[in-house]
Image (cartoon, rainbow, N blue to C red; front, side):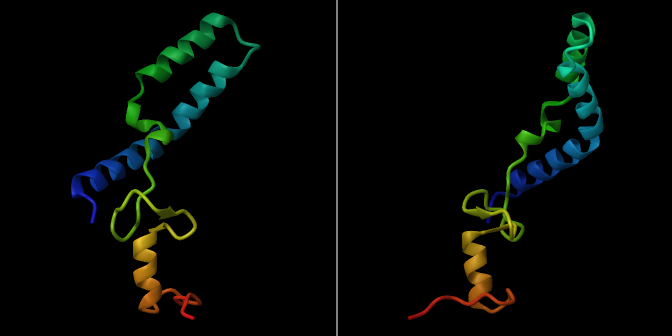
Length: 101
């Protein structure tokens, strides 16, 4: 199990990302629009910089839904390799069996 503080920190970041997503997207669009005057684009960059750092999507960490483990993460299943193996061995994932030969 991962530290609870790390898991909670990531959850809080996810909430911030969701809350500021629309505002961040509109500011980025303004900042990247080459047709606008440079002053207006610069103001958009300044407003982007004022937003909380943790509201940026690239600050999120993929974590296992069961254990919170940050490494060995399968995106499709949202599980770590270890949790996936345990669930597959106990037959809790439909259609998945542990290989044996």
